[in-house]
Length: 173
Image (cartoon, rainbow, N blue to C red; front, side):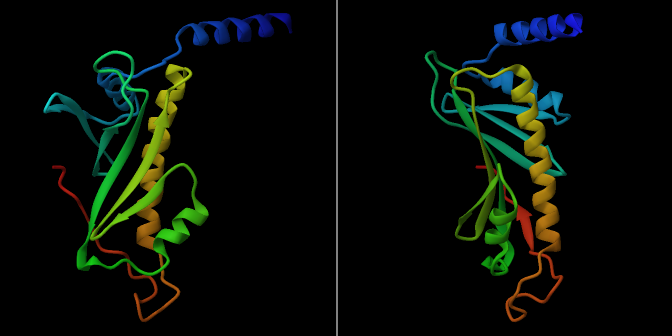
């Protein structure tokens, strides 16, 4: 019994020693790759951009607050923008997602919607936490696409029951 306790203490101590207090694009690229996704790193006007895909649909990393040094960030948003064909989603689709899901939100921008999830490392997080957040994101994307496919509006005049929302991947700028 004591041996198990010592092992747990040692694992916790080594994990604490490796806390991440800020992120670089390289660290996040590694976490995305460890989740089984490929990553393309680009730079535009001196700002790094990461693009990846899950479930066959692309997503991007939007950096948040800068860290103490150049190229470091203390938070970011994973974002999957989609264009709504015809410009109208079935009534209640977004509200139902927000009622039934946590961690990732849908944001509507005119004819665009975006599934988004924020990740914050301020105060220190473990490499395992970062990896798990990327895995959670890929799971949220899968659940989102299933939600879109299976959603049936309560108002048959808006969209016939069982008719999926028609979306297409938005091309990143």
